[in-house]
Image 1 (cartoon, rainbow, N blue to C red):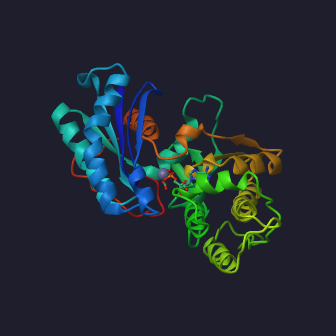
Image 2 (cartoon, rainbow, N blue to C red):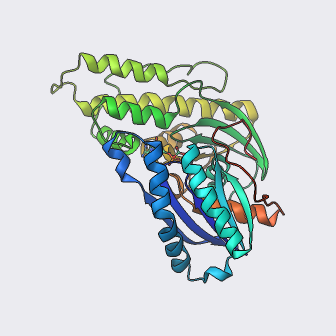
Image 3 (cartoon, rainbow, N blue to C red):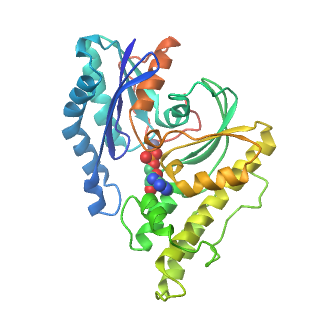
Length: 331
Ligand code: KG4
Ligand code: ZN
């Protein structure tokens, strides 16, 4: 079958076509307008989705080399995310499904991030663990099989991506903060400043990043750049505090569950230093790194998971609603 996927949960407007588990097109427009504000402005995001969706849909269909009439199903993110942004995508998707007279399926954005690990890969077998690290969530999941997921633990406060974004703002770097800090940290000394690694020794799978951000704020209050301590050193030390916590809990999840295959997902999964630390610290495990283009928000993961759902005979009634908040379940 041919499935068109639509993603508008935050500040990426994305449309993709998937058929037979293969991605035929994957179009993403990152709304750079938000960088003027240092973070995502929800109302602006909804308006941008509204402005971009038709054009991107036409582009996704033409670059997939199909006719619109060949589409057999629509998949759309209905949560978690920004309410107005989700509504824009869901309303557009419902209109399209009605107009084309095809089925529609609602997709959980977090499940899609996790299942993106299977995209273009045939060497992954269940069960596996997944560290999901995005702008809004930091969670460790046990993926027993399709549709059978257990949340092992999550952050008590800020998400890892949020720690990058807020940290970048404190450091005077741009938005989104993850790539900015990663870039700045490249030439820095990660051992120069000892930032706190909250809960790292606890035997529970849980994270906390809000104290780290406050600690950076206090540090920067009295910071003056010198040849001995440059902004790059601060960025590298801050990044390493976040990554150490993530890797420590990946190890703990492996110990607790006995599952030795582990993957990463979400925007922070793009981070090269995270990937290197995982490689270095989890030597005896099978590690799955998704392709970079499938880490940050995209619609390939939505169309791909949508097709899987249709194949499992799952579809949504046309009156399904958005679900902006995470409610501890993925489906
Ligand atoms: O998954 P995603 O695109 O959107 C959400 O669902 O939240 O993740 C966005 C987050 C942002 O916080 C961004 O700063 C972070 O992913 N991010 C990174 C990197 N690229 C994006 N964090 C660390 N290193 C990166 N290279
Ligand atoms: Zn996401």
